[in-house]
Amino acid sequence: MCTLVFAVRPSPDVLLAVTGNRNEFLARPASPPRVWPELPGVLMPRDEMAGGTWLGLTARGLFVCVTNRRGAAPDPARPSRGLLVLEALRAPDAAAVRQMASALPPSRYNGFHLVFADAREAGVAICDGERLEVRTLAPGDAHLVTERSYGAGEGVREAEVLREVAPLLLHPEVTAAMLRPPMQRHGPSPLEGACVHADEFGYGTRSSIQLVLRSSGPDLLWTQGHPCTEPPTDLSPAAAALVQAQAN
Image 1 (cartoon, rainbow, N blue to C red):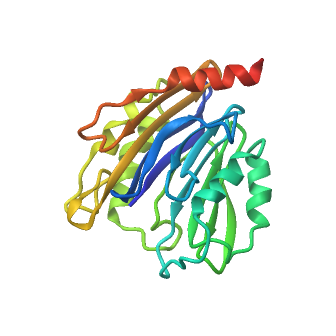
Image 2 (cartoon, rainbow, N blue to C red):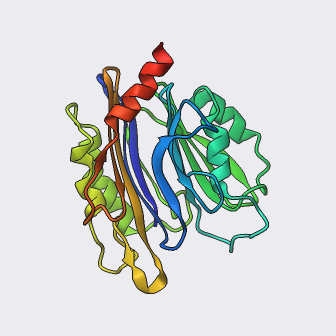
C-alpha cells in the first residue's frame, strides 16, 4: 500500500510538508529523482517501465503524487497513471492542476488518487475508472492518502499513521528527518505497515520521500529501497538548485 501524508501551510514558516512511501512490484524498474531533459524544471523519479512517474516537485513549488485506488481490476489497455502525473507537473500551479483534473475523462486511466499541492492550495482528484471527483483539501490540516482512501476501504492502519504523523507535520520546527521514522514502521502483517516487506509476492516498499518546503528553501530526503534498512539521500541541494534556477 502506498502511503502519503502531507500538510499545506501547517505553520507560518512551512509552505508544504510531505512524507510517504511507494510500494510496488520489486521487478518494476525505477530511477531515483533527478531533473530529466524531457521535463526541465521538475525534480522527479521515473518509472522505467512506462516512462511516467508517481511524484514530482516543480521549480514553482508544485508537488504532485498519485496512488492507485482499490476497486475494479485494472484494464491493461489504459495508459499508465504515471503519465497523468507528468501531465500535472507541466502545470504552473495547483489551481491549474485542479482545472486539468476536472476535465479528465473518468475512463481514461484506471482508478487513482491524484494529490496536488503548492503553497496556496491543495486538492485530490478521486477516480474509480468510471467516476471522477475533485476535492479541496484544507490548508493547515494533515491529510493521508492511500489506495484505500475516500471510501475505497480505509482501515485502522490509516488512522494510526495519521495520528502519529500529523503532530510532526504541524510542528513549527518540522524537518524532513523528523518525518522519516513513521515510514519505517512495520505492520502486523507484511502488507499492512507503512514499510512493506512482501518478498513472497514480489512486492514491497521501493522508495520513501520526506519534504519540508519553506520560503527559505527545501529540505528533501529520498530513500531508494526500504527506509527501514536503506540510508536516505539528501536531495535538498538538488531541490534548492531547481528553485533557484526558477528565481533567476
